[in-house]
Each structure stands twice: as structure tokens, then as C-alpha cells.
Amino acid sequence: MSIVTLKNLAKVLHSVVPYVLYRISKKLVMSLYLFIHLQMLKIAKFHAWTCALLTALALLKSDAEFVNITKVYSAVAQGAVCLDGSPPAYHLSSGWGSGLRSWVVHLEGGGWCRNQTTCGYRKDSALGSSNKMDAQSYFSGILSNDQALNPDFYNWNRVKIRYCDGSSFTGDVEERDPVSHVYYRGARIWLAVMQELLARGMREAETALLTGSSAGGLASILHCDSFRGFLPSSAKVKCLSDAGYFVHTKDIAGEETIKAYYNDVVTTHGSAKNLPGCNSAMEPAMASSFEVIVSNILVPDTADPNGTWKDCKLHISQCSPTQLKVLQEYRGNFLNALKALDELRSMGMFINSCFIHGQTEWQEAWFGANSPTLNNTIGSTTEEALYGSIAPTLATRPVSIYDLLMVS
Image (tube, rainbow, N blue to C red):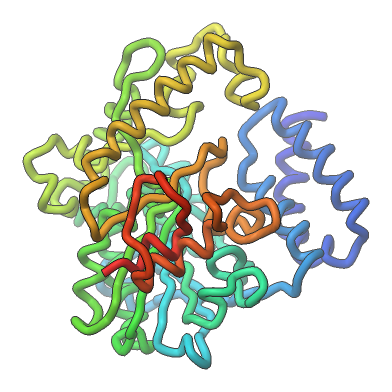
């Protein structure tokens, strides 16, 4: 099967899977998923399409909630636009009952673009243009409205802010790029969407949680103080970064590949002025230093020209003892980097050893029979932390995310 054929098939699946596969048998869904998943792993990184298929499987277990897109046309006059100049967008499912004055605001992930070329390519996709986004988004995981699947947040106001700027909502360059013809306006998008949500009732929030995954997880860290500032002083406000805490480390060739990458991101998007003040003494590229997963951090393609790590990057079971040792060393570096936060009583961490990138939107990882736990699922940990029932800890005793977020 050719790459072109697979790409076309993936696009079709991404569009129709949520509506069609819900109607067919579980056996057929599983067979289709396994076939396409194996084919895609052989030729490219089709994470988005795999997620679409996993979503379809979830639909077999519960009623789906598809939430309409809202485009903030008024933001265009403020220069708050996606890479291609289209308006920013979000999806809102209104809360009810006990959750009427509580908000979960989730920042979509999707990596970054580092220069004119990569941002130019990106502007023709849903990660660079609201014109390319689906009219509806399926809410699952922390955004689900099903009490059985999301018992702590199901009736809150749940928002998904779409990611179309390529800078984790930090960019702000006045002029349109003359070469790629794109706009670098992520910071303006953040402000415009916040103003929109405040007008739609968030200004009266009593409890609010800013979340994000991957690039959105980084954004939830960078914009946490800003988010707090928008809300009433009496409100309980916390931030959750899912797969967004990125440790600075060298790759297997001893190069600082990701540092150089993010230096390009900061320079291209004019992000330095929008990074938190506590980082002002650092290099802009390190103020939000990030490395993501094995494929991008320890073993970028440039550090492995002979493809020695190719199989290991596809699945942990294919790693040699030597490669596993390298991964364990990275684990140690990651935990050491977190020790500085261990004494901060207002912060907490839920750390598990799953080889997965992002868990809050994936139902099976968020709150399910097989979701990762430290005596609790991720979802129940979040609720307990949000309301302060335990103190934060570096995963040294049983906790859940609800434990870690609502500590005062």
C-alpha cells in the first residue's frame, strides 16, 4: 500500500470515523484499526489518524458528545489570527447543576513550527487555519459529559481552545511574514479567546482548571498566571500540564537538538516578550525548554542517521538492553529535574511510566478500567487535588490528579 493511498485513507477515516464506525460491529472496528495501525507505523507518524480510530472505539462504549466549533470573528480586528489569517476558534459545552460555575479550559496540542518553511506548510492544515478545522469536536477524557467516564468534571463548562498558531500561544509579530505569508499571533489568540470566554460566563467562575496536552501542556504552564489574573480573586484556580513538562537534555549524539529547535520557534514567532517573567534571566530558548518523547528528544533523526533506533522508537518492546539503559538514564534526568518542585506545597505531580504522549483527552488513559493509576486513576487524582484533600507529592504515595490540582 503506497504512502499516498494511506494518507488519503487516513483523511477519509478522520472525517467519517466518528459517525460511521459507531454504527458497525466492534469486531470489524478492531480488525480495521489493527490493519491500518500496522500499515501506518511502517511508513510515517500518523498519530492523528490513530487517535481518530481510538475515538471510534470509545464511541462503541458510550454516547458521543460532538461539540460545535465557535470562531471568534471579532478577534480578527485585534490581529488575533491563525497562521493563515483566519479567526481563532474554540468548542464550548456548557455546564449545569453543581458545575454551572466551574470551568475546564483545555488547550489543544500539536507541536510547533520553527521557521518560514514549516509554518508555511502548517497554515494549510487544521493546526494553522480555522478554515481547515472540523465543524465539530468529539469531547472525551477530561472533556467528557458522561459521569461514568469523567465523574468529577462531566457537568462543568468544558472548553477546547483550538491550536492554530504553532507557538503554544506565545507569538506576536506585527507584520505578516513576507516569504511564507503567515501571521505569528499566538499571544493575541490567547487574549482574544479569554475575553470571549469571560463574556460567556467565565468571569463568574468559582472554580477553574486550565489544562493542555503536549504543546497545549506547555501553554498551560506559560499562561497559568495570566489565566489566574482573568478570574475573580475568590475563585479557586489551578493549571494542569499534561505531557507538557519538558526537560532539557542532550540527544544520543551529545547535541542540544531541541534547544536549537525551540530557539528557532522563539525567534520566528517573536515569543521572548511573552514568556513568563520568572524566566527573564534565561535564554529565551530555555525559558520554556522542551523535549517531548524518545523520537524527538534522545533520538532525533539527525542523531541516528543509520536508523539504529528505528524499531525502538516504534515500540518499547523492540529496544535493546543498551537502548533501554539510555531510556532509564533519561528517566533519572527527568525525575532529578522535578526535585526542585517537590517542596512547593501548591504544586503536585502525577508521574507514571507509560510510553505515551498525552493522557487527559484519551478516555482509556484518563478514566477507564485499564487507565494508569497510583492507587487511583488520573481522573480521580485531578479532582482531589483541585479541592485540596491531599498535599502534593512526587508520586511517593497513592495519589490521583484531583489530589494534586486543588491543593490550596
